[in-house]
Amino acid sequence: MSAQTTDELNRLRWDGRPGHYEVYFLKFHDPQTGLAAWLRYTLTAPRPGTGEARCEVWAVLSDPKTPGRHTAAKDTFPIRELESSSTPFEIRIRENRLDSGQCRGSAGAAPGGPRLSWDLRFEPACEPLIHFPLDVMYRARFPKTKVLSPNPLARFSGEVAIEGRRFEIRNAPGQQSHLWGSEHALRWAWCNAGDFDEDPAAVFEGLHSEIRLGPLRVPHILLFFLRLDGAWHRFAGVRQCFTNRSRYRAESWDFELDNGSLRLQGRASAGRTAFAGVTYLDPTGAHLYCHNTGLADMHLRILDRKGRELRSLNCRAGAAFETVERRPHAGIPILI
Image (tube, rainbow, N blue to C red; front, side):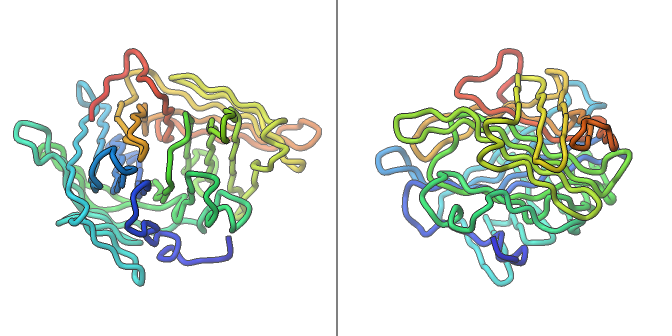
C-alpha cells in the first residue's frame, strides 16, 4: 500500500451496508504498574436476517497484582450512535473517542457490573505496518478481513481506572491497529511484541490464520513481520506459507521462519490464568471465542542464512498473544 498518514489508514471503511465489521483496537503493557490494557471500538452490521447493526466499546484490564487479575466490560449501542470523521480521523460513540493520537472512554454501564475508564495519549514510535503486499488486497472482496497497523509500536501516557482505582500510565509501550471486512477467519493466532529488553525499538507481529476459500479450508495463511534497526523484515510471501513452520496451542505458539535473507525462530507463551476470554460476533451471525493476554513472554532468535545466531530478543510478561476458535478453550473464562 502506498505511503499514507495514520489518519488515512484509520479511515472508517463501512459504507452503511450490511455484512460488515470493523475494529479499532489498542493494547499496551505498563512495566511500572504491571497493568495490561486492551481497548476496542467496534461496529458490526450483520447480514440481513441475522440481527441489528450495532457499535460497541470494550475494555479488558489485567492487573497481575489483583486476584482474578482480569476485569472486562463492554457497552453496546445502536449504530446511530457511531460518528466518524476522516480528516482528521476520529471515531465517536457517545462520550467515547478515538483519534490518531489519543483515546478516552468508559465501559461497564450495566448496574452491578465492573466500571472501567481511560483517558490516554499515544505517540507513534515507528512507521505503520501494512500487512498485505498488494494494494488491491485492501480493495478486493478477498481476503474477507483486511488488517493493518497505523501504530505497530506506540508510547501511551495518561490514566486508566478499574472500579475507581486509578493507574497513572507513563510512556508504556503498546500498539494501535485497524481491521475490517465481511467475515472473520475460521480461526487464528496473533501476537505483537515491542520494547524488547535488548532493543526497545524492535517490533514483532505475527498472524497465523485459517480461512475458507469457496468450499476449501486453507489452514496456513502466515504473515510475520520483524522491525530491526529501523527496517521491516517481512516473512509473508505466498511461498513462505508452505515453507515456514507455525504451530499454536491455547497457551503457546512456536514458529520457524525464513525469508531468504534472515531466519527467525520464536515462541510466545503464557500461563492459562494470564488469558481472558471474550466473544466475537461475525456478520454471518456466528460466534467466535478469543483468548487474549497482554502478559505473554516472547523469545526470538535471529539467524543468518547459515544458521548462525545474530542476536536474540526477549519481552517478558509484556507481549500481546491471542488465539481465536469456534469453541472456547477449557479453563479460560469468557468474561464478555
